Amino acid sequence: MTPHEARQRIAQDLLSSGLRRGGAVLVHSSLRSMGHVPGGAETVIRGLWDALGPDGMLLMPALSYTYVNAAYPVFDVLRTPSNIGTIPEIFRTGPGTMRSVCPTHSVCGVGAQVERFLKGHHLDETPCGSHSPYRMLRDAGGQILFIGCGLKPNTSMHGVEELVEPPYLFGPTLSYRIIFPDGTETQLNCRRHDFAGYAQRYDRLGPLLKEDGLKIGTVLEATIHLLECRTMWEQAWAALQRDPLFFVEASE
Image (cartoon, rainbow, N blue to C red; front, side):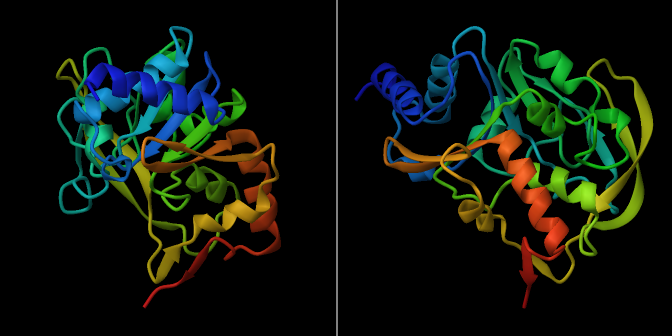
């Protein structure tokens, strides 16, 4: 299979699995899960974009909490790497990709209306607040796609948790040094997520989502899960109202 053929296959598999052409999608991914992909991460990104089409919007978390912390509270929008895998890091550094300003939970994106989705993230004092792309995606009726990684790495769930503030969620507020692409700087105060003593169990979402909220398919060799963002927020919020510890378990 050539890179072009792999790209076409990826786009076809995604559309067959329920990805909406012209829609907005936030992608979590494992490159390894897809088997051998000619052209690697670039082919996957191009396949995603082919499926969405010119009117779509492709988003990926560019989380940097490993690199930006109390010992080193500096976030450089252009240079601070993501710590969550190959595909989002290649996407972050690609031509035309924009990145939201959040020291620990930024989002990268390309496509229609992406600037509107990303430009206000720095206005929040929490990682996934009301101005974040995670909330914007919910309000726009977007989708969340998991390629080969199951439902556990669901950053959008932090946005739901911030509405409820379960006891494990927040640690201290830190003051971060923010370096913008043009070299100007500012200070940003943001509460940090904690989870001390708890492990995330966002896979528990699966049974809560009805057929209109979750689709399962395949892309190349990977199993994919495709969530309707608005349905996920509604069901997750209701679950946390019943039990604030529903999506975590005590860690060893």
